[in-house]
Length: 173
Image (cartoon, rainbow, N blue to C red; front, side, top):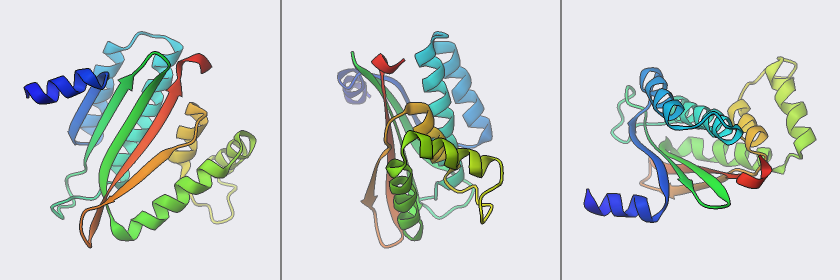
């Protein structure tokens, strides 16, 4: 625990969670963060991004043990003089990996105006296939105004570990 504590201090971690993420735990986590953060613009933005990122884990995480009940993940917020860094991680089945990679690549390629148009099209159901896929990713980029950073780490033939990182510059607030 001492080593973990030292790492968290060294990396300027202001929030750290590892565990099961479901609707109940999500509400509890958000309540904790809400109480810790001041009601400033950056705090509201971080809070909203956190909601989206944790919901992403809740909806898309796959179990390392194969059990469908547990949606386990990790979520970290770090702070430096210039920025906040939000990072989430969870297991996903390898067949989903390409879909996630393509969705993130697509979202990152959109200009801000294209992003808003795509977001509204999906939100209002005027999308050709009426798909809502990627709405959370669009919302994360829309709120952060930065590209999403993702990594995939092969675990075995069945699973990969997926990380999503969002950087919020303090000067853009």
